[in-house]
Length: 133
Image (cartoon, rainbow, N blue to C red; front, side, top):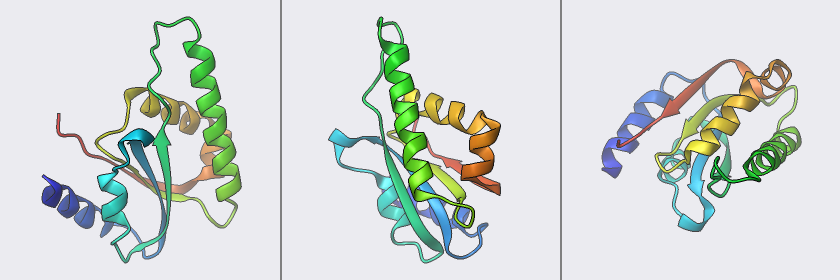
């Protein structure tokens, strides 16, 4: 239910300072809807919203899956480098309920890397993931 999701985001964002930088991870671009993004754009405590859409679903059993995963990871890191700097880091990461599993794995690998963690994340980031499963 969209109202439940909006309420959860609203309450969760109260724990953040004002005008935070939020990364919203959406589902596939072809779906054209991202409930988390729509909800956060209405929230006054959000300073900047950076939206990323899931890379096309990657089948880990296909022969070229590792190169597809790496290409997606490389593109995301490059986008983070362009959009973030010493003064602007990610305070909050919100996973929309339509995010693909492979996209979650890619972001986990990026943020487990100490250099990327220091370059892209605030000292104590908040991560919010909502699932209807």
